[in-house]
Length: 117
Length: 112
Image 1 (spheres, helix red, strand yellow):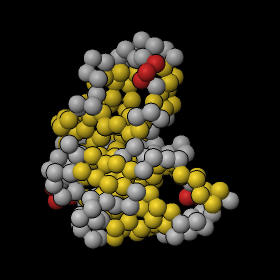
Image 2 (cartoon, chains in turn blue, purple; image 1 turned 30 degrees about the horizontal axis):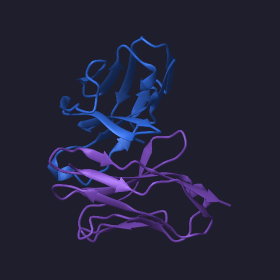
Image 3 (cartoon, one colour; image 1 turned 90 degrees about the horizontal axis):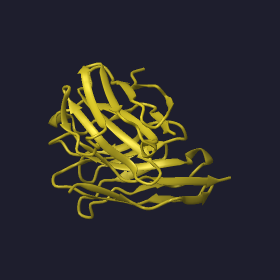
């Protein structure tokens, strides 16, 4: 059963520390999204990639957040330095991208719950 | 810009009641439309979808019809169950850039 895998599932860290979240998209999916979910803001798109190239990262605070895809099987989201306001659930999703595939759905991982104290 | 607006929650209903969750969208183009559901502690999972005007998506007793004239995709279920308690997200996807845009979500509580 194909699924998106995120690690870690939970992370508690102190303010100022670096946090790295990882995502393994579904094999064959060439578009990967990072979302952040909070009670106040709902689901926010932070960044997304197609064929490992960043398409849009305008939703991401550039001074502390960075997103990369070192290879087709791994996407990473880093926060350095972390702050308490970064506490949220971070979701990765993948989809087969390209215009003819626009009716296909995205598959979500189970998320990383980040708490910065 | 492209956006999705859905009704504020929480919505609280008794079991077997009729459910409607409103969703409207703004898009420059011809999007595909989706409803996702999120159960506690889980990621989002697809509930149903529609890819062109007048299409009806359906799954697990839920339905939604793509209405281009009113730019809406309202979610309905004739008789809800306690197990339907979750957060429901309306979303659109545009082919030009693959971006998927979500509404803020509607929390649904079903009372036994």
